[in-house]
Image 1 (spheres, rainbow, N blue to C red):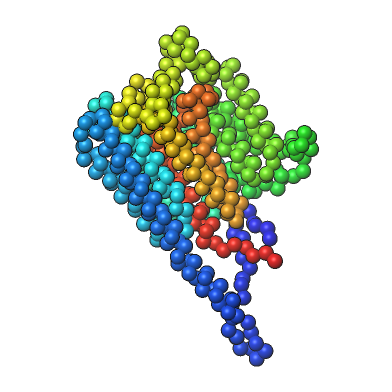
Image 2: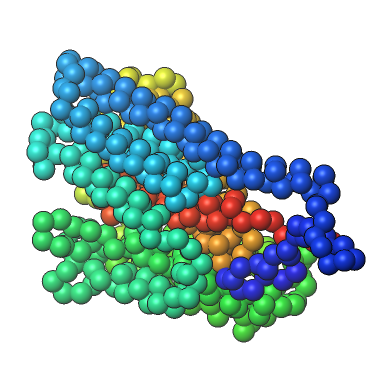
Length: 485
């Protein structure tokens, strides 16, 4: 049975009763009656089990987050300040409100993504607060207070999206509108009067605060890519040339991949934003592979990405500087140079200082690394939580991504499958790019670590991704499976 693009799979009706020769309905067989009872019980019990599991994990996350803030206060200030704990309690109440909302409107939603997002957000807040305590930042000048405000906005946005987006398949109708919106959001920082001078041209000023529209653009582009690939999958999966054990697409089918590649290069050249360019191109290649099942698309994407990186490193000074810092980070001349490897090396030294179990929250010296609360939040946590703590954080990201991919692969419509896999892979790729950059595995880019790093636009975008995954998972679990045979 073929699923219509972006539509609902037709479900074969199950016979509830049989009709006798006299035209009267006879009672169903005992096996059918038992099946109906079990199905009714499952509709009642399974959703509540999912939500109860989510509530237990949320309580665990609240305890960990509160303990982290208390340890920061004891380690850095020597006393507990209840005011920030009260603020954190308000944030926990919003996470609990999201849980209650799911009990009402999306009882079948995945029970793991909200607790993981809450725990990562709280751990990041604790470390940002730790840096504010050292520098004596208070009020709106404190990054932790701003992060708390943004976290509240992000959670309210997630609640509203879960309530309003009753059927995620409606997004399929507006595929090209989301594509246009994504491109316009990426171009906003180039508009005179809106862009800010903050290194890469990716921020816009809205008066009292700045915002990075590229974070919302990645969601819009994920919706566009999912809808576009559903519509064009047949042509992209058509038979190509068999060579070296792979089926390679024909030249005319390379158009979409080349267009996205050129857009990514345009972002790198015009906005000096290496991270966003890599993220968008990687997301498209991953979704293209899921849509077609052809490994050759991945190989072509890797070749194009490598070729673009080589060309950019040769022609663009800031990209060349990133590569030099990566290859020769411990060169004394490069370490002391303006824009050199001082930040990268200090982050590595901080993680080395943390060792296996860390110095303890509030007792390290993460402030020695510039921008420790945003770009270098991961080394800051590595110094105070140690290698064990970093592995625990990476495990949380791994579980979050695996749940998102599982939600997509269990779906019965192609659009939901591609959208869930696309946004989940975006989180995973963003973590890889940032963690790989600060650990000198790959050249450093300007992305933020999801949920952890200071940055309101990133936090809002990530919680909107959580809401999308919740809606898709609820639809996947609540829809009956297709019976074949």
